[in-house]
Amino acid sequence: MDATLQLHLSEQLYVRDPERTELGRRIVDASIRLMDRLGLERFTFKKLADEIGSTEASVYRYFENKHRLLVYLVSWYWAWIDYRIQFHTHNVADPRERLRSVVAVLAESTTYDPSFAHVDEAALHRIVVVESGKVYHATSVDADNEVGLFAGYKAVCNTIARHISEIAPAYPYPRALASTIIEASHQQVFFAQHLPSLTEVKLAEENPYRPVADFLLDLLGRTLETEL
Image (tube, rainbow, N blue to C red; front, side, top):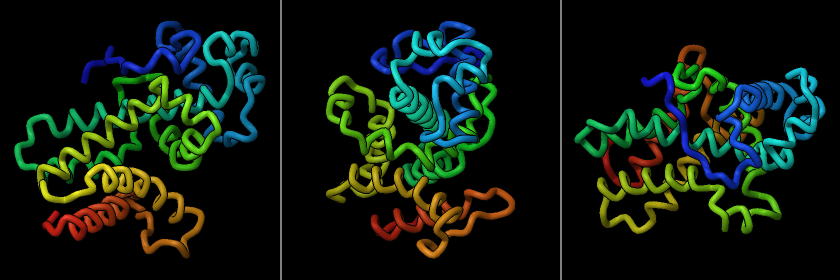
């Protein structure tokens, strides 16, 4: 993969593009590590500034508040997932094999990607599992949607829906099923870790998220009445 690769995100997500400066990349790196460790509620820009040895004012030059920073991080994650889906399905002719690859990316994209050295993808995945619902379940959701802050999430959903329609063109709810699969890929991880009585999925010792992928493939196969 190209070590200089950059993901393209909406300019509405930030005050100043953090990818363009060393300080901005440090803010992104430290915010992921700190939010993963503290959770969104305890995370503050003051703590972030202390983490990077800078000032709160310098953080505000990039993000207007911590909610918008969370939206940025989640948007980055979905843009990265979209990139990985395209990478892993580019030369795959069989639509069922493409859908299996998509599910693997959704469930198992938790390892370091050298294309983005300043991002801890495993920590970011944990943030998305725990905190991403707060991005959409917010009073600003309609205004945020209006300016395109959820484009990455929608792109992934539309890609999955397209693969579903290729396999089962008569199926009437491809986007509903796609968004359900996306949410389940994180919900089942959360339940397995924190509310195990709500799921039969158990994270494995080796390749821990493979049971999540198995569940998603079973759900898709039964819904679409096809072998996956």
